[in-house]
View 1: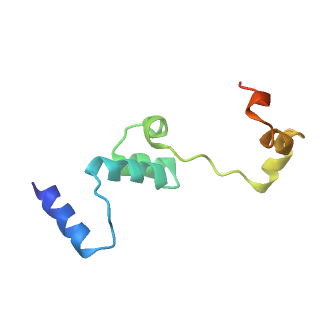
View 2: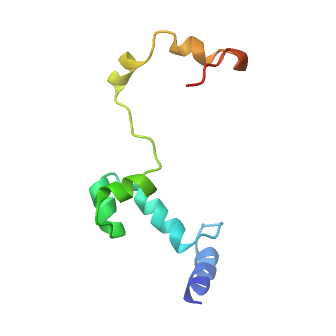
View 3: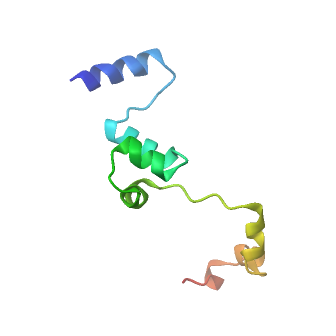
Length: 88
């Protein structure tokens, strides 16, 4: 019951427009914290592997040197029609 009252007050008194659950907050924390170790600690996981498996939804940020890893025809592949796509 307290969550519904809290949510009602939050929607009324802030710019937040959409309802969310406590579980949504947990997923947000697990996904947004930069360090996997810190996220595992905040979520109370015994192992950072659990956090990685269930909460690390964001892709890892690539360094600028990652362009050298892409195949030479990468940009032309993006312009290919669906019939030319290769699925791995």
